[in-house]
Length: 394
Image (cartoon, rainbow, N blue to C red):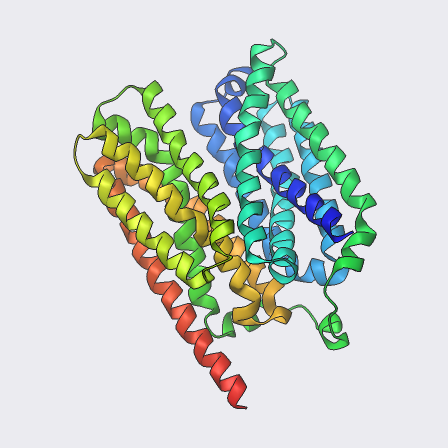
């Protein structure tokens, strides 16, 4: 029975990744239909991101009231509905409107599932589940490509993914009894504990440093992911086609790295894996600084991807043990919101800096976030260690 629930959770993570790369792969065609400039994709992306931040911050309240299974099922249903509405949209303002439930649904799934996995599954599952997100994100461009080359257009691409999400949502509603049966037994006081207010969350020892760490990590990851192609064109003087092909290796590195990291969690602690990942990111950044050597630049982005792989899943899985199981949903909700803020703000900020200074500033921009992430992670480790020692003494 528990194995069946794990399979459903794995499918949910694939589903979570499916919509994430649809807009980017379809927008060059969509914008022609909507007579919209290239930059308008950023508006849709920002609305989706704001929705995910709101639902992440609400996840503690919603999960304690409805339960993880129901929150996940409703959130996937909202995402499915939004994708279907995208598939029939005829005006740009409709996309902007439908992006609201799209973002709210995605954030609800992300925060609730991550907390459930952190509480009830081993560390290896967290890494493999985030690897499944990468699989979903890698599959959707092929679905959109099939729709575009088949002559049916981007509408069908969104419709196909919407159908997949609808089927998964139905599966999640049917499986609701499994979530309760398989969940770890909690005390009555934990069940009835009121949701934490934001003021209470930020007063938790190490919480603020943890949120800044998440912000810095996602700022680094998404900046590298978005601007790798542009950097290669500027740094290595290669064609846009080759740059796009090589930049995808960063995404492959992070996805494969999370698959490998699942096995490494059997032998090493989350703290060691996070520090190893940070070291690999540093090595990768140094490689891409070396001028005009294309092979080193490509290798550098792959190594950065491999280094990024353990950081996100390991920090999330450590949250219940670092901050307490009763606080984990509230903590993970704000962690997700912090991650989305980093993803939303850092890449366009680099774009502004690159326009006014030089695209060559990318490695130093990444180093800034790496240093911030490293410092904040060590503060979290130190503060939570002191808190545990004090509690044990009492």
